[in-house]
Amino acid sequence: MNTENKQEIEEDHEASLLNLRMGKIKHKIAIISGKGGVGKTLVTVNLAISLAMKGRNGKVGLLDADLHGPCVPKMLGMKGERLEAGPPGIFPAFGPLNIRVVSMDFLLPNDDEPVIWRGPLKMGAIKQFLSEIVWGDLDYLLIDLPPGTGDESLSVLQLIPDINGVIIVTIPSEVSKGVVKKAITFARKMEVPIIGIIENMSGLVCPHCGGKIEVFGKGGGEKMAAETGVPLLGSIPLDPRISLDSDSGIPFISEYRNSEAFKIFDSIVQKIEKFVEGV
Ligand SMILES: Nc1ncnc2c1ncn2[C@@H]1O[C@H](COP(=O)(O)OP(=O)(O)OP(=O)(O)O)[C@@H](O)[C@H]1O
Ligand SMILES: [Mg+2]
Image (cartoon, rainbow, N blue to C red):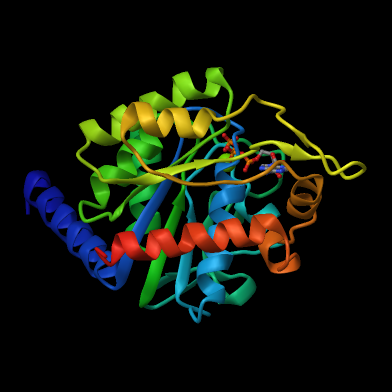
């Protein structure tokens, strides 16, 4: 067999494996933003918990597609987990509420080890995460992307042609708005539906006086929604408990069921459910 034929057969095999794995997942959603540090990972982790809490124990998957700065395991209290391989492929690790999680972090020898890869290698890794992981039958797969519209985002959107859509995370500042708009244009150019915008770090309620401090300004998410025509799914406040919890690997949403943030996540999830069901 010549090299060209061999390559063709390998590509066919990879494509059919990808179709097989992705075909078992009802809804696939990527979480993006042009800007770094706006809370994409925090939002993704808490959305996964929120979705799983609604009768989907074991039916939610989370792919940490941030190859250079994977944070999902830390936020889910899964540091030190490893992926196990069996005859059908590589199995995801199981997190709280049996969320199936895959992250580069599970493959690195230690915390200080960086991933120093160029585009094609990154595309290859994402492809393997999607096709060689035995995700199984899932209701939702959430994909946490690194900031920007680079290789990882491009690969995910290209490799999952039937992706339900993307969720854009922003913070209220003008600086964030400017960059995040690029993510909206990116999704539109890729012809991927935009489910909506989540505004994070939207004001801080003072624990002493109860007054609201608009740390990054006010109404940025609403303005962006009006300017771009993309719906605002919800605004999540800045809360020191959210940050402390994510540092200790406890998804906020599972701890504070009476908090404002819990209710906001719940209403965002309802909007996502309606979107994917076409209601
Ligand atoms: N609403 C919030 N209240 C308090 N802390 C928050 C909130 N949202 C996010 N954080 C904290 O801010 C930091 C950055 O959040 P996160 O890592 O989710 O951002 P990101 O957009 O995923 O970053 P990156 O671009 O590097 O992937 C984390 O320490 C997180 O716990
Ligand atoms: Mg992140």
